[in-house]
Length: 256
Image 1 (tube, rainbow, N blue to C red):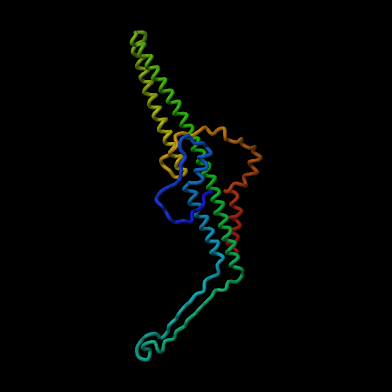
Image 2 (image 1 turned 90 degrees about the horizontal axis):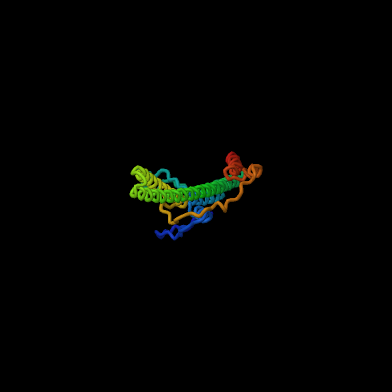
């Protein structure tokens, strides 16, 4: 979980070590959870909710006032000899358990911030996993395009020899040249798609230029999908659903 940093000192450098080389799904998930810009903002919202809860338990501050009447004027009111000065200290005394009720509202709001944070963590985890497999699929397509391009080159070389020896007509070579051109286009397209998916994956931890080269097949780490009956029971554990019990309690506390 991302924790908001108490230090406000910035050095202008980033000591984070990004995933590089061949990365696994577990590495991508962990790094996204630790460095996602979205989770950083949620972590600060948690701190804000905590501060508001603490502030809700503070008693109202006393107030000091000074009133001056019959101030400087003319004649008998000239100067400050006849002024009336009133120095006043007032303190609000809350009744009806208002302070405790404010604290209750503050606790509910802090719990809501925690639920929202958990929901955001699941979103980041899901998004990072989906983009990981998009990169893996793009890699596979790029590999196939590379193989197809090489195959087209081999066919062209064979067709050229056949034309030179008079076994085949020049039409066969033209068809091979066309196949090579199409294979080159498909290869370039696959490589650009792979680059784009890698950049999209890197954005999950706030980067535009990924350092990793490839992703490793993560299908062997996938768990089997539970039965529907098990999933139906666990729906209430989803933060987007579980937060509403807290939300209803907060609204009732506000009404109180």
